[in-house]
Length: 106
Image (cartoon, rainbow, N blue to C red; front, side, top):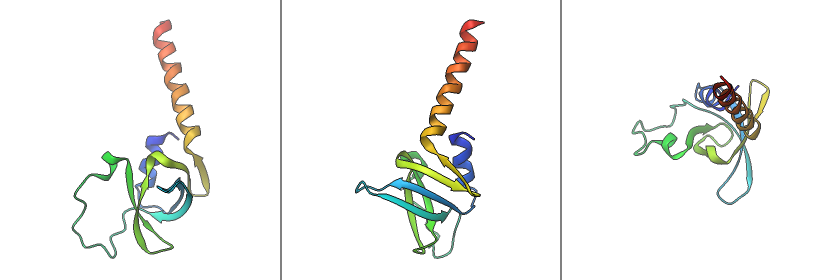
C-alpha cells in the first residue's frame, strides 16, 4: 500500500487509529473516523483542509472533531494492520528510483 492508497482508505469512513505529533511536540494516539456528520452544523470549512495537509476526523473517545496534520503522522492502524508512514515513503521513493532507472537504461 502506498501513501495515496492509505489516505484514500482513511477518508473512506472506516474507523482507524492514528499516531501523530501534536503542535506542542507530544505524541498522540487517536481512534477516529472520517465522514461523521453528527453534531456538525452543516456549514463546512472556510478552507480546504487537504491543501493545508490536514485531515478532518471525528475523535471517537472525546466525541469531538479534530484535525490530524498529515506531515506529522507517524503511523496508522486500519483493520488491525499497522502502517508506518516513513516506511511507506521510503518504499515509494525506491519504486520511483527503480522506474527512473528502467527508463534511463532503455
